[in-house]
Amino acid sequence: MTEVNDPRTRTGEEPGAPDGVRESMRALPRVFALPLTLLTGRPHAGQRPVHYTPTRHLLNAATSVACGLALSGTALRAAGWALLLLLPGWAMTLHGARNLRMMIYHQCAHQNMWRRRRADTVLGRALAALLLVQDFGRYSAEHVGDHHALHHMTRRDPTVQAILVSLELRPGMSRRRMWRRVLGKTVSPWFHTRFLLARIRSYFSFASTGWRLASLTGLAAVAALATWLHLWLFVLLAWVLPMTVLFQISNVLRLCVKHTFPAPGQTVRRGKPYFASLTNAIFIGEAAPPPGLPPLRRWAAWTRWWTRMLLIHFPSRYLVLTGDTVVHDFHHRHPMTKDWANYLFGREEDHRRGSPGWPGYHEVWGLVAAIDLVFDSLRDADPDEYHPDRLAEVNHRELFMAFDD
Image (cartoon, rainbow, N blue to C red; front, side, top):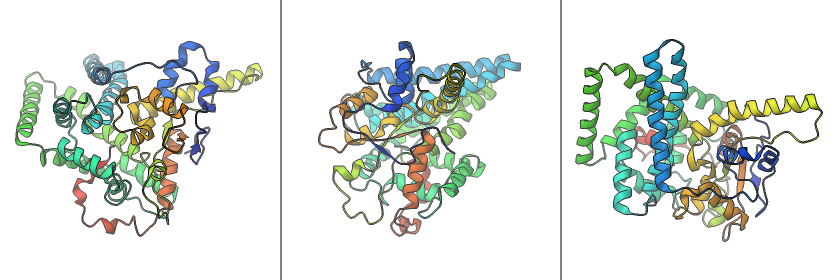
């Protein structure tokens, strides 16, 4: 479970300094600049910002879901070798759904999507019904009240509860044992069944009567149309599969990189330095080959680099660390920024200005390295403070709904 340029520890960024890994990619033609920024999550020094709007993010996510469903439907209709198109179809559906959950729904919970309370609330409730995730009102209260307040990464934080109870990770466990446990969960039918049932319960138990009736009516309409038009295979393979098993695998891996645990014996647990220490940027990719290599070695190095970027790092970004999750540290420093839709360039600008009022940023390159960092922080965490028996007041049946940030 290693990656090239795996730092194993966070790298402190000198305020305003460009990143060496990202700068190494500037050897490529200029046409690759923006795609590499979107992939890695890091603009290169001096890169001109590309401006996005909240509505554009919403439309992009919805379009990804629609295209994924269309591609999956084409694959099922054509059959034969065309069934391989199910793979990109699932990927596009999952990518769009995760962006709807991780960016749009999240910003709605902060009343920061369009910064209009009624519109943000209606959209948030609609997305909760579509994705079958925790009721919007309950999520908003818990997320803002517990995760973004003094209870951040304490026993009251839903993130901590999900790691300790749902994933069954413990202080003192070795990194290898944590990996085995997490990967085992991702392929466990029992785990996915419990996860799905908890999602359904967390929505229907707390949604208003009107939204519950609307959701049940919508589900009944889909079932009736699928029966009438003989589309159950499409519904199950094109929508249900990516929105259950694949959605939940992405969810689990995302949970494992969100925040590090505080060091044992850390007595000062308030203030900007403390909260900044618990969240890192997670950039995706690795340094490009250095210049000056002999021709054969240069060809081999670039072939290897492109292979890893496309087959390892791109899936990590597209399916797990979607949207603004790569710069989640920027969100925790500025949760109500009006410019959240330009998160990559917003975080870089804040870093370039020396993150006024905050300590310098920290970064990790690579999904595996980021998970290792969180696992190591839990291994070293206070075993008494983070013992699951201390969570007796928590309704464990609901913890699966708390995975996302």
